Amino acid sequence: MAELLKLSWLIPVFALLGGLTGCLSVKPIYYKDDKAVAVRYVDNYRSLYNDERFEEMYALLSKRVQQEVAKEEFVSQMQKAKQSNGKFLNAHEIKSEVVPVGSAREVRIMYESEFELGPCSEGYAILVDGNNAIIDAAFFNPISARSPSPQR
Figure 1: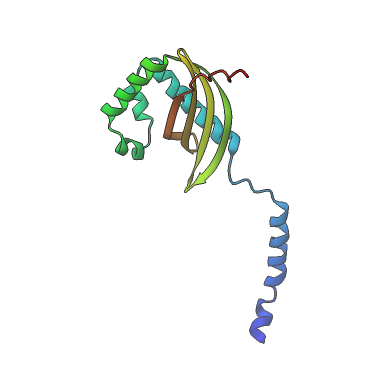
Figure 2: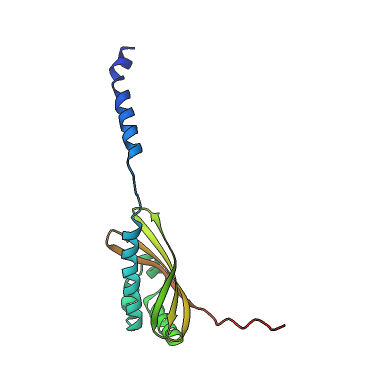
């Protein structure tokens, strides 16, 4: 009983701490900051694409992606993509989200993009930690022209 009385002073301390934490607003994911960093990396990636600096694009990819795709294969794929789609012109963001992944955050961004030779859908997953980022996934797929609906 004497031991319980010695610890009884902790009850008001825990009550106070509990009350204070209810007043605080905790924001574990900094959406705008992380997204801004990711968008800078996407812009750089597109600029390198337009300048046909495909080896430098490869350097922006995560080690995981680099282990899955050899540099020569990546460069070859980008050369074919450039021939098929032409230069990147502009894009409209259609969706984005920030997801915690370990100690970093993954920013996922989808775009409807315009290339010289037609529209494409683009998507990126960028791992962001502070002002540092690495592209963990990237794709763009040509959007085929819709055929006219049949007349009745």
